[in-house]
Every structure is written in C-alpha cells, then in structure tokens.
Image (cartoon, rainbow, N blue to C red):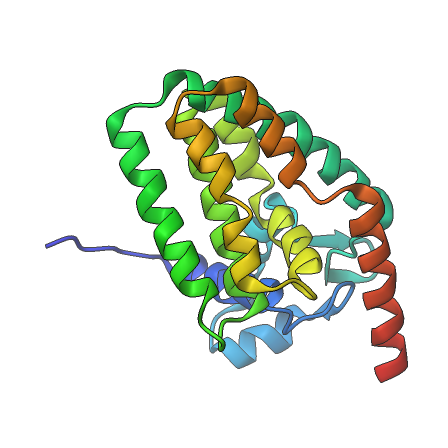
Length: 224
C-alpha cells in the first residue's frame, strides 16, 4: 500500500492552486493571509509558506505594501509563453520521435485514448481539458529523454494551464483531443520531422490567443 503524507503547507498550496487554476480566484485578485488562515483553519505562517510555494510556481506574487495577489497575465506574458511553447514542444516532439520506445508508445496511446474519452463527455469543463492537454505535452517532453527540457516545462506548467484555459474557453473539447492524434501518431512512428512540424501547427498562434484573451477580458468587464 502506498501511503502519501502531505504537510499542512502542501495541502494548503494544493487547495489554493486548484482554486486559482479553476478560476475561483480571478487574475489580479488580492489574497489576504489572515482571511485565508481563518477559512482554512491554519496558522498564518502555514498559509504564508503555501503562498510562497505558489509564488515559486508563478501563480501569485507579493507586492510591497499591498500583499499577495494572483498573477495578472498580460498579452506580453502570453507572447512569451507562446514562444516558449514553440521552442520546447517542437524540439521535444522531434526528440521523442527519435527516442520512442514500446513503453513510450503505450503510455502515449493510453493517455490519448483517455483524452478522447474525456473530450466526448458533454459535461467536461475547460479546466479538465486544459489539464489533459498539459499532461499530454508534459509526457511528450518526458519521452524526449531531455530532462532539462522536462524540468523547464514543469517549472512553467501552471502558467501553461492558464494559457490553455484561455485557448479552450471557446474550443470544442473533443476537437481539442482529436487535434493531437496526428502528433501522437508521428511520434509513435518515429517520424521526427513530421512530429516537430505537427507540434508547431498544434500550438495556437499568438495572434489568435491574444485575440481570445482580449475578448475574454472585455466579456468580464461587461459582466461586472
């Protein structure tokens, strides 16, 4: 039996991380240590350590004389994340195709089948699809065999989830899954050139993601 032990700090960080990534806390929203400590029934020091963990993950920031707040993604952030995706995902797809093993093929096919199954569920949320896309790209980067690429991608994983959430807000979940099938097939067949090309084509361009971001911002202003 596998026993997983989490400290109170880790549990608090996991809880707050989920709220942020699920959109329960909006971008730029202030997070008050004392209020969070009261809600979570934890000490302020524990909450502070959890927030520090999330700060290292790029989800929250601490401003002098202001306190903690959720990061406020800007168009420039999206521009940087787009080019980071192009650099990491295209090269990793090429390497994964070069180094693919039978075990790697099995893992990719299993995850792809699950991705498709979830995408067909009419009740699936944008956040659930985003997490599956992140899981697929993370696996491809792991299968590249380049652990430094893998670590870099993991370091920005939560910011990537925000990027994917913006992209998937008006995207059909099943189509999101199906659009990755050619990429997985190319990797599993060892076609590195095709895998790299398809990985690049699979990334929503900055102009499109920027337009979606602006529209969602305007929609939030209309609601408020």
